[in-house]
Every structure is written in structure tokens, then in C-alpha cells.
Image (cartoon, rainbow, N blue to C red; front, side, top):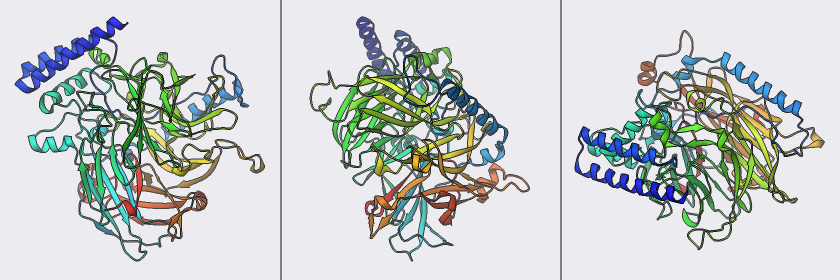
Length: 629
């Protein structure tokens, strides 16, 4: 194996050298052919991932459907084989119901791209803002502007901003702007566009060709679109995506959005070890409420180690970095979780093998035979930057294969158990994750730290199809009694605006789930504690934002939080507007709904219309007023 790896490294070095020669000497079609042969040789040389680290439709398409016990493990729960089989049947039935009620014309209308609005517009309010709602900015990030031959997630990150000043009598403002990434600046400078990588799915050869063409034209295989999520630490705000260095941005109190640094390596924290992307950094991380440390688990595919954990002090100053050396192949690690003592790595079998492209298959596939594990990395102690990384004490817990994209939370108990809550999916086939939408449900894993085994793994609620889970971040790594998620109204396609995703969802509600048992109140884990439904013909277009309530100008954890959701109205009488009407005439409209996190069923306590509508996007955030420039 060592000899094979050594030969693999040699082949990659030779191929990388050839890349550089071709890039800097010629842009001819012949060079593309030679480059293709070099890439093919590198891919065939080893089954390890070598060529590209790609973003895939993660936030539009999650997956799940079964809940069964592990062989050799005994659950410390009341779930029986009959219960698990019943859960599986319920999940299938709920998916079938969602597929029967889909409105595909509405679904497509919500994907029409919108122009950026860099100059702020005043927002007209028809209701009063709660006095315990803080000043700051509601932010929503998502892909926008990709061509119809590309995938939705190939679009550049468009950031929407709603500023809320401290004074109750001062108007709110709305603005939007593209993240001015390194890739966008290259396009403007050279007068040509990057070729999207996701429109090729589920085929591999067109993807390989687009990577090579981008390498020739831009010396980068994929574009740093920075279109997925936002992360703040010490007042510094980053726009993130899968598998590329982030961009740092600033928001002014007047609502102006400015990209400060593109492809930042965070003062050397992100290794420049991928020739096609310039380095990798995960789309999601977690902030410890006790220390303020920001923790990310990032994955790569060009060479081992295929994953690493980074710990940052406030302000994105690297404190510790740990290589995860024992992954058998690259896997997509979209999110992580933390507890008081550990960072969790979800090594689930959504594998990334570029060699598949030579067989005209997408490099990312569901590969259950690769197994599934939850890894625990000690948060304290030395890492790669502080000393030897030969033994960092990573522990692995085997569990049932599936897919975890988004975690909810994790915590440790006094009796040496560790509990993880996340949304779990189980694709029906190797390629179904790409070719169709697959449902996700709220799950729980219980890890016994003494025995080193998973002693509990179950679906907490098979009745609710959900996406975008979230908790009040002040409970991250601690016992959180509840969590929130958006509810799936319907599933269907095809998406006509872009080539991928081929299917997607309509969102009609926000749900609050219990994460603990409360015998006195007759509440069990997974029970729905509240629901907020959008009005008829209004559809959620993003992950809701949790905003802590304030008292006396300060956050007070005992006061709870608000849920901020943005929905878009699609008129259906006499028919859904055309793409041209939506793009040019602002036929759709969007509204912000602010709901008390403890009283979802009561309805919105504050709502207002935006001057322009928002299409589908991905993740959201709230930036406190003190961090606005």
C-alpha cells in the first residue's frame, strides 16, 4: 500500500507539473487534449481522490428514510423492531404524500434569478417592532445568476441585507450585492465566464471537461462562488462554500455590502494544498458559547489527510489544527458538531472519487459499503500547529450508513454518554442523491464513551419531513431542550431554470421539536412543540434565523429567542407568472415574518414586506449592530 501511495504521489506531481506547463505556455485545443490525458492518467493511477474538490447540491437536496438497529448493539431505548419497521413505513408514506401535492410551476418560479440592489431602499413597516428585538442586520446568502446550462449551486453568492437600527422610529433598509469573489474578479478582468461544474450531474465526462477548461482559462478548476453560508467570529464575517477559501465581507450601518478580502487563507490557517481550488474550508462550523472558539471540520480530495479540524480564537486567529489521517477515502463533510470536550466528525458514505468521471459518473456518490462512523476529536491538547500529530486521540464509533448534511447539536452527559442530534438521510441508490430529492428526518445517536459503541440510533419523528435544522446558538455543545427546522410541503420537479437539482421542495412551515423527554408534561423527544405556517401561496425561501431577545440592551438567555423567516408569494390566479414577468416586472413579493420562538402557534409578532422579492437561497444569519461598519 505504501508503494502504491508513493507511486500515486509521483503521478500527481508529474500531472501537476504538466498542468503548470500547459497553463503558462498555450491556450490551444491541443493543450486541452494533452491535459485531459494527464488528468486521466492521474485518475487511473490510484483509487484515491485526486482531481477536484467539488461543491454539490447540498442545501437543496438532502436525503433519508430508514431507522433500524445496529447488529451487535442493544438500544437503551424503547424502540422495538416493530417500531423501527413502522417508522420506515411512515417515512415512505409521508414522502409519497409530499410527491403527490407538488406545484411545479410555483417551484420553478421561486428559482428565477434577481438583480443585485447595491443601493439601499427604505422598508415600509405596517406593524411595530418588538422592543426586545435587537438592532443589527438580517442576512440571507444564496446562489444567483447561473446559466440554464449550469446547476443552481454554480451561481455566485448574492447576499441580501435588511438593516434594523437601534432607534424604533428610524426606517429599516434593504439592499443586496454579489460577493465579489476572486473568481468574479477574474471573469471581469478576462472577459469570459467560468464553466459551471454542477450542471453536468449525474454525468462525469462533461464535468471533467469543464474542470480542464477552467484550468486552462483561469488556472482554477472551479469557481469560489462563496454562495452557501455565513460565519462570524470576533466581528469578522465570512462568506463560505464547499471546498474553497472564503471571502471576507463587511456590512455598513447603511446597508452597504463590501467584499474586503477574496480567497482568504485566514492568515495561513487554510493550507493551499489543492491545485484546483487553492484550499478547502467547510461551509459550516460551530461556535463554543463558553470560549468563543470557532470550530470547523473541512474535507479535501487532492491528497491525504482528507479532513482536518481547525479551532479559531475570536477573530479567526488559528489556535489549533488537527489532521484526520485515517479516512479511507474523501467523504463529504458538510457540517460538524461540538461538545464541551470534543469536535465530532461525521464520516458517512457520501464519497468523493474523481476516478468515477472516467466512467461518466459523477464523482460524488452514496457508497454505503464504505461504512459510517462518528469521530470524536479532543478539543484540547496539541494539534498540527502546536506539536506532534501522531496521536491526537481520535475515537471512532461505527453506526448505520446514511447521509448527514446538517447537524443540530451534541452534548455529553454525566454518565459518560455523548448524544448527537442531526438530520439523517438514506438515498435509495448510489446516484439517487444527485438525480432525485431524498427526504431527511430528525435522528438521535447515543455514544457510550466507556464501551466505544453506539448504543442508540433512532428516528425521533418519522411524521415530519424537514430541512435546515437549527438551535439557539447559546446552547451549542450543551443540552438544548428543543430545536427548529423548516417543514417540507411537497417534493417534485423537474427544475427548468437550471440543470440541477433535478428535484426540490416547497416549504410551508417552521417546526419546533423537543429534544428531551419531560414526563411531567407528557412530552417525548421528537414531539412537535409548535408550528408556524406561512399564509396560503407564500413559501419559505431560506433557512430561518434565530435572533436572541434582549433585555435592557443585553442578551438574556432566559428570555428566549425570535425566529425570523422570509417567504415569497407566488400568485396562481389565473396562472403563475412567467419567467420573464418575474425577472422584469417584480411580479412576486417577499415578506419577513418574526415569530416568538416559544409561541410559534400564535403567529407572527412582527412582519413587513420587502421592496423586492427574494428567490430560493440557502443559509441565513443575524449580525449584531456593533459589528456593522
